[in-house]
Length: 144
Image (cartoon, rainbow, N blue to C red):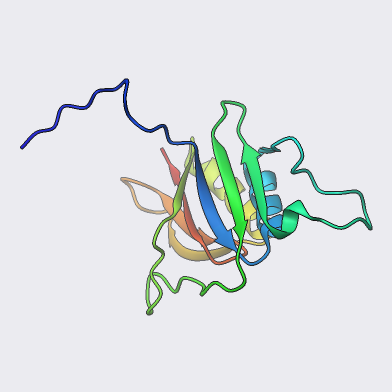
């Protein structure tokens, strides 16, 4: 059975939300990696002041309006993908323009606190690297 979709009556994807045990730290990782901006009111507080938003929910935005949000949780098992009992469940795909750009981003990811999970930079069809962010969420950077 084929369902015809009424494009005027469908939900709109608002954001992707990552659970994490340190929302501010993970938001800062992605803010730095992707050049995103905090939603008004979610910016880090001045030094020495409590971070009320960072203990609950933070939102980053692209210039085009896409959002990446971070939800504080008490505990979260780190994904053990590609091997092990804890699947990744979801991941972000990020693209760059060339293998040279992929090499540059590799250094940035590591400097910001990510770690390499899989290296397929030599794949002739789709050069890519898979990383874990500081909270253990896998994400890919590939030439696209």
